Length: 304
Image 1: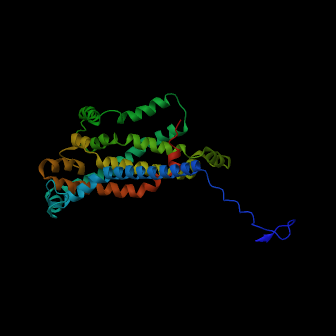
Image 2 (image 1 turned 90 degrees about the vertical axis):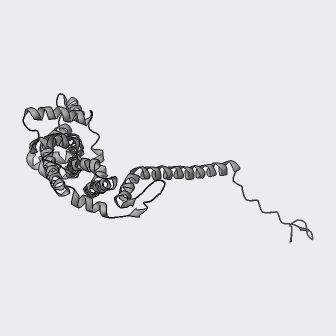
Image 3 (image 1 turned 180 degrees about the horizontal axis):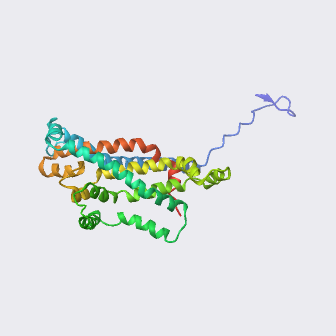
């Protein structure tokens, strides 16, 4: 209690402190709604990602389980017994060694031939304007616009007339159909992502066109070209229908051998062979994944 001036001898209570300002209920409600929306959105995104992961990885997990399963019947969630006998069946009883050899002979050859044919076209699409450019680009995509088996049969009739059925060259030609788009579009994107100003600066410094290409353009476009070559390698490695149509019985690759396993062996043996066929693809994709997600490579897809 304190005395108030002007009123000697009288005591009065001090004024009460002002009450703190309360935030309006409407603002708090909006904040709560935003937080709830973020939680729900994060939960929904998590569920979608989990479903996508199950959709992609689920078949691979089933393959692994089948490869080691001795007995597995519905409704059991896991195999009732485990065994390694299917691995012995595939590694010893099938023509795996020959199939692997031919697969890894055809894949590099097809990749190199595709690079020789498609890389000049990719550079022209990225850096040159010429009549019919868009039409020619669409023609390249036409290889993937129709059912592959129809194209293979049409190509087989041409190869038969050229006496290339059942030959090494015929198999290489039929497998090239799976690499045309990859070996043209991705390198074209890589060439397009190289800034022309760098090439012009090198030319102004006195470098020849060939030197500018090898020392400026190629180093910057190399990641995209490597990605395209590895994807073309995998396309050749996994090709089955064309090789079966043109190369059998002399040239049997791993995917073609898998047809025989599906027809003549139980499901677990097929699962073992599918795992063996998947391993090279996974290894090569892990090698190039940093280039696949490169922002520089992605910028090049804005072709005009």
